[in-house]
Length: 134
Image (spheres, rainbow, N blue to C red):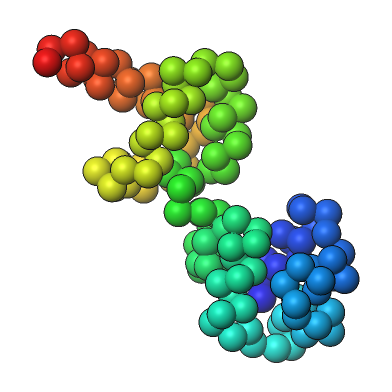
């Protein structure tokens, strides 16, 4: 499994801890990490859910960690860039779940957190203007 070891290291969790949390043997997990074993669909979903990533990311099919990373960069990096601007943070959380913005964000996968902040400001300004016009 392409990214299992990386995700486990990021979370600072041992194979033993993962074994206990997911009720999967340590040896099975080790074989998965080393590509010596294929995981069942249910295990793949459990691992993706546990690590908070998409199945596609876990399997190495996509570089977008979760379906809710609209800019193709980790949400936390965007949130860090937004600092304590609560209005932009609220806008960000509203936009990541909307289907009507998915294509727009998909096209901007290589965006930096700074550029993501600029786009969020523009979208928020447009939405504010529309709200005032109602």
